[in-house]
Amino acid sequence: MLRIAVMVSGGGTNLQAIIDGVKDGTITNTEIAAVISNNADAYALTRAKENGITAMCISPKSYESRDAFNDALLEEVNKLNVDLIVLAGFLVRIPEAMVHQYSHRIINIHPSLIPSFCGVGYYGLRVHEAALKKGVKVTGATVHYVDEGMDTGEIIFQKAVEVKDGDTPQTLQRRVMEEAEWKLLPAAINMIANKQEYK
Ligand code: GAR
Image 1 (spheres, rainbow, N blue to C red):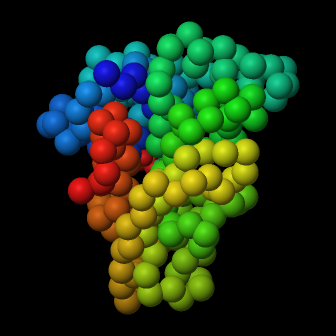
Image 2 (cartoon, rainbow, N blue to C red; image 1 turned 135 degrees about the vertical axis):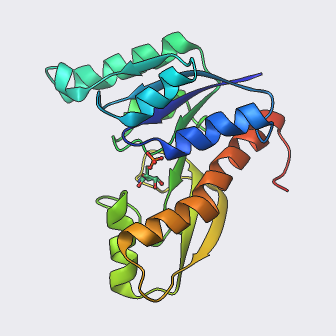
C-alpha cells in the first residue's frame, strides 16, 4: 500500500480528484495519510476533514524564519512515514533538504505543457493568463517529479488541452483541470502505486 501525503494551498480540486479516485478505484493500493496546507484558510483542508483524512496546516507565518519553517515541514512530513508526497496546488517552494531526502518520491501537477509557462512566477491562474497572452492554441498539464529546480524535474505524464476562442483565464483553467489535471494526477499516483505503465 502506497502511503501518500498531499500538500495543498487552495481550493483542493486536485485533492478531491485524488480522494474520489481512491474511493472509486481509479487509484488502487493507495492510502492518503494526511493533507498538509501552508494556508489555514485553504478549502482543501475542509475537503480532507469531510473525508476523515488527517488535515494539518504548517504556515511559514508561524515561524521566525524560512529555515525554521522548512525544518518544521520536513519534520512533520517525516513523522507521517509516507512513500510519496503529492503536490496538488502547493504554492510553496519545497525545501532542498526535503527534495534530497525524497528524491523521486515527490510529484507535482503543473497547469501547462512544461517547458512552456513554468518556473518562477508561473502558478495558478497566472499560467493561463500567460498562455492566453502568448496566443497559444494548445496548452495542457504536466505531472512531474520534483527536483531542486522550479518545474524542472523528470516528466511523468502530459496531456494537451485546446485553447478556444473567447477563453478567459478562468474558463481555460477550468478546461485544463477537467480534461487534464484531474485525470493525470490520479493516474500518476496509481501508476506509482502499482508500478505499471499509464494506460
Ligand atoms: C491547479 O491548477 C494546479 O495545477 C496549480 O494550482 C491549481 C490548484 O488548484 N498548481 C500550480 O500552478 C503549481 N505551479 P486546486 O487547489 O483546485 O487543486
